Length: 621
Image (cartoon, rainbow, N blue to C red; front, side, top):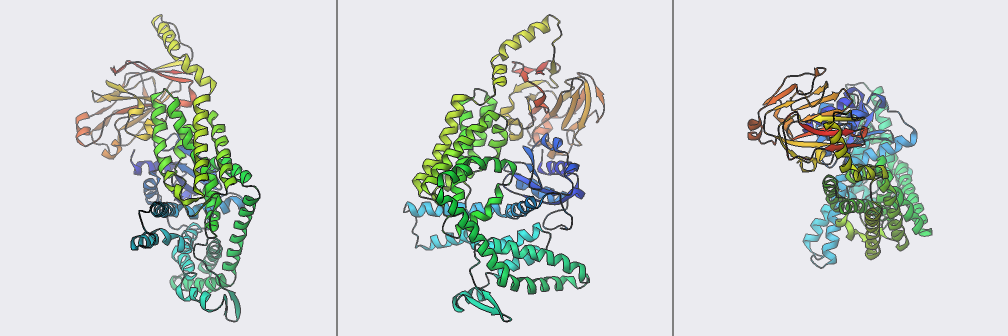
């Protein structure tokens, strides 16, 4: 499915453009602020091709996409006509705490990628200077340092833009408020005026605002309220220049007099409190953070820690990143443990595909949603490993020296380094060992797998004897061609079984027939995919080709429409295999049982090739 098609489905299933107040994205998920969550079709979203999961938390409706979320986001904001600003008078439901976290997370989400990239660059510089490959006094070092430090130094400007955007105010005025705190004439006062000055006779306490978070959050939040008031009271023909001018005239002085110093003191107090707890019981703090961070990620509120981490970094180092790293490496260890333990080729392929993003970038949502939540008995493994690793980091007083997502590449940013390496290796090893020793599947699933061969034999004997098979459904092949496992399909949505279990066929004849008696529930406008619900309740998706939605219907001729009644073997669609291949698209066709959770097992026939209407799958209820 193309990004544009997926974006259209997402907009439709969150309740349409009229239900969307705003949308931002982080590393793996779209974060919608909706007028009414009840208008969103959560089930359809979760069953959609390309969506890993849906999470509702902190006033946000979060659609988990994966690492290509930024591409989907671009199409969503085009289709739904949302983006940098939308009327903030439209309120989403939720409590005050939830809304605060929503604003914080929504403000950091647009710049998380840039923050992570800058942090990784600083980690690379630390590694190069540590190994003597680059001199800390060289021009190369200073140029690359400028690239890595710029976002952190000018953070109030970027946050001014994103906070204003989130609150529905002019983002560029928000950026100007942040920039005023870093303007050279203002910053020179700190050096020349001895720490204080006056504005119209009012005392102003001077302080450095570079890399700070809370002053601009407070200032721009007040500006958003003022902006709304001014737009209601000033004639629309004068708003273009009067609203920005009055906003700056009022907010910037108030920020230097009150909001800024209060924000700095507030941030310092938060940092002091965190460090106080850390100094009193590093082990307890580490165990708590290492054990709980996995659940913060699942709920999508982990970005709410960003301001506290950044505030700590301005005061010489942050312990939170070191502590939560244990949870990240515990999750990576789970994927590695399943990769070693499993004999199922599909599960091994899924586990292997989630390892690389986790190790290199610290993005572990595919592990959480694709493995941990699927095999829930592994949740205690991850928690135990996170508690141990976090405790080790806390005991040793490990801190991060800059912001970067926890990964193998960001190891050099932590100090002291050796205890940190011991902590993350401990977390990784514990989940790996627990998974290998105790397994990852629940007892019921293990019993099903162990008896699978025997059940197949019994079922085949019953079929041959003409007996009725209770609570089972036979799915015949809709195509003629060669069979291949889903794990070998060149599309992570299908190969990871995120859409459901099933099988794939490389067709040799350009027609597809109905695999069941049932009703056509979906015919994509492009004709490349058809959904059928059988009389027994199986929901089947036949997706002819990979990314063939981009052909926009060329070479496909469906002969059925939504709502049609079909019998097993009835023609569904004709398609031109050679033309599709010439256009550069594989015709590999996944046949997916999208309501997989309804079945105890989905059994594949042991064949290398199949003719249309021959037995393909057996569904065990």
